[in-house]
Image 1 (cartoon, rainbow, N blue to C red):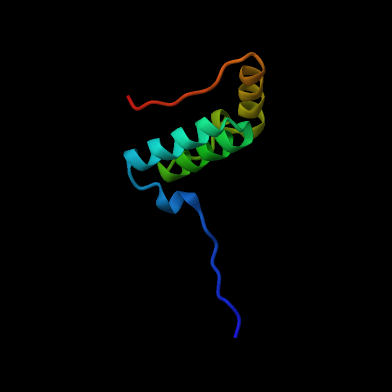
Image 2 (cartoon, one colour):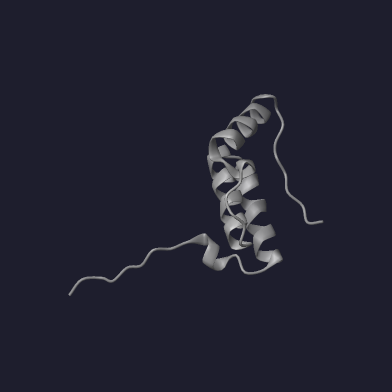
Length: 79
């Protein structure tokens, strides 16, 4: 008998503004540009939004990478 597995999607767990904020804070703290782009895409999907150019991994990764090279970091806060 084998082990049953299922796909895991972060979107299934982003069910409140507090959870989303904590998720983004953790991802931004890590500072990995590809991870930030993926997290923003996950949040957009959790909010029912289609993927937009703002969450395209390649564009955001470039911006985040440049900021990191310049000694800056991205941050997120609730409004």
